[in-house]
Amino acid sequence: MIMKTKSAQSPQTKPPAFLEELLQARSPSGYEDEARDVVRKRVGEIADHFIIDNLGNCHASLGTTGSPTLMLAGHIDELGLIIKHVSDKGFLYFDAIGGHDRSMISGRRVDILTKNGTVRGVTGKRAIHLMTPEERKRVPEFHQMWIDIGASSRDEALDKVRIGDAAVYDHGFEMLQGSMAISRAFDDKSGAYAVNEALLRLAKSKKPNCKVVAVSTSQEEIGTRGAISSAHLANPDVALVVDVSHATDHPDADHRKFGRFTLGGGPILTRGPNVHPAVFQRLMDCASKEKIEVQIEADPRPTGTDARAIQVARDGIPTGLIGIPLRYMHTPSEVIDLDDLEAVVRLMVAFARSLKRGEKF
Ligand SMILES: [Zn+2]
Image (cartoon, rainbow, N blue to C red; front, side):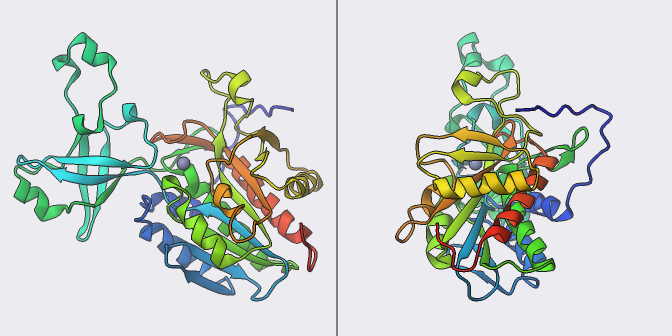
């Protein structure tokens, strides 16, 4: 595989406004309203049909009847914190929504989403000066951290925040060099952007032979829950899932364990039991036709993505999995290459156009 090298002098890529809006939206699993509003605004009018289902999945479709029906799935939820307890002094204790690295939680500014708007807070913990040498080596447990909103009593805190309110880190989108970008929650707002952007491009040019349903799924981070119900409703003949995938081109990844995947190396296509071989092959063929460089990942188990749920929905759905290479997954500052994301969009458009009327995998 040829590794693209990009110099620091590469011209700065202009990020898509739709992607930036999705990243600004705060949407911890189960609390995805802001992201749904962005999707509705961007694709609701252009799609032939747009609905939000009972689990909060957005279904935007092109073509009302169709054989085959192609489902494109990317999740709009992100990691978050959920308020569990408020102390007498007004400090908020929390649990995690999704798989957090506990060493990353303290010292962050957070936005708590309440019924009266955003409440700012900071994740506090005991200062290093006040720890024993042994304590300094340990990662704090959840109950050893708290959110400080500046309240002085439980009543004052509960006046602003309710038990069950969710919070996200205040780490927004920024460009790095060239086409590299940094944000919280590229996992998987970048995938949700990609599936909806593919639908928009299909809508603006010659319509494909199939019905296309772009589904922005909810609650992926807590067990691919939106994918379970949305795959049933969308009832596709074939599905493509887009999620982020580990780039291993940083100084602490053993390629013998994790394979070699680079930012800028193109979409990562998964092979293994969770992926239909003919769907994988069609993606390879489309990539080759479109001159899109791809990377191949082998996964022997159900993947940690919506593909896990969609493949076994109904009587089984031929499913493919496209990964956006990403560094620092599930940290507040994830890094992707926007050129990879653009290639993912183009690959899905090419896949949709490749489907013949009535085709089955
Ligand atoms: Zn994730």
